[in-house]
Amino acid sequence: MAKMVSLPDNENRHFIIGEKALQKGNFASAAAHLEKAYEAVQNFTIARPLAASLNGLKQFHESLNVILPHYKAFLETDADTQLALDAWLGTLNFVMARTMVRELDSTRRQHFLKQIEKAEATGLKQRGEQIADLVRKLSHLGGFSRQEQQDLFSQVGLLPKKQLIEAAVPDLTDLSVPIAMRVSLLDLLTNVGYDQPVQYQAYDRQETLIPSELPGMAEETAGPQILARLQEALGDDDQELGNALVQMARVQVAFLYPDIERLIPDQVAFVQAYLDHHQGKATDFDKLFAWQAAETAKLSE
Image 1 (cartoon, rainbow, N blue to C red):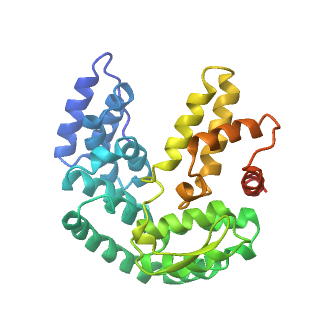
Image 2: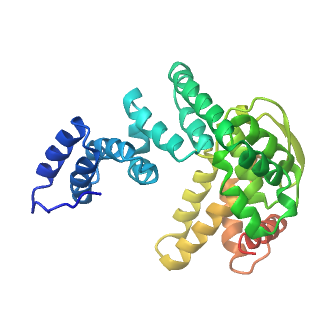
């Protein structure tokens, strides 16, 4: 990165110089100036050319750090979506690239899917052995230690759609795979648009689901409603404890996806039971709470 002499109290000047440098293809100078502007005002107007500059430097991880806080804004036009897609593909995260374009209308989605498919084909050609090994391990995730499971799961973005399906489907009914990972794998299959039936082991039953017909976890509404009710019930008393309870509930309620509404038909009763449970009182949800606590503990094993 080029050295940058600060221009005191003149972030707009950094922005103007950075944009001019970007137009000339001088990505290093552009990024240096635009980073100075962005430090002062972290808005989308600056984030857009800064992401373009970082992409030009092939600093794709850094570009994503700029893009993600303004994610929705980057999806509004094809040019800005292209910047985000270039960053995801630059980090070889095909799964997140597909997850992103799922939010677009069908016409725009098809345009970007062609690029993803081409990038996946290149990835398979260049990293076929690595991808095949990852599929073999991920499809038997339950056979690994918790740390190994987490390490393998962190690499899932490298998988093209076909290989993701091959790796994820066997784990959906494997009780030796923590529910947090089974839920996440199901959500990924939803996000890449897998439209065939799969068997999924939920909290209380094994069920047949078609991932593409589910709302993604980001679009699911019951969970956020429950958390809002819990926050309201806690009020302003002991905010540190209240925040800890809400954060724990955020994780534990997510374990119930995609069955949150079925398992918690009465949100008010559930929130009261959740509070009572953490005060040592017996509730009608104690079996569910015990299961959630056991699954939470697996995350730190």
